[in-house]
Amino acid sequence: MSTWKSIVHLAAAAVLAGCSVFRGDLESLPSYISVGAGIVRVEGRFGIGDPVACVDARGREIARGLAAYTAGEVERIKGLSTKEALRVLGYSNGDEVIHRDDLVLLEPRRQGAGTRG
Image (tube, rainbow, N blue to C red; front, side, top):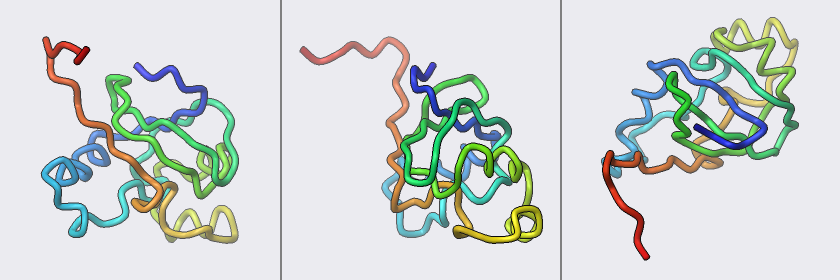
């Protein structure tokens, strides 16, 4: 569970799209969190360039990144395609809510793994 105040909740399909990153195949991965389509909920307030946590359906934090849209904008375009988001907002800050260049994927924690001391 993330303790961040600004959180983007991702659909399962968006989470699965990022799996190749864990195999080290970043170059073949398209922009990770596209405009709206992979987002199911927005929590907290954030502006353009602010850090946000990305969580999966179970609330596990899987990534952190810098937002290309405000929380209010993301709320308006969540679940929409890029084309639909452009129509709703009347402008575009790009095709991604968080571009892969501004995204850090977190290694999933293995059950029973201890901490290094």
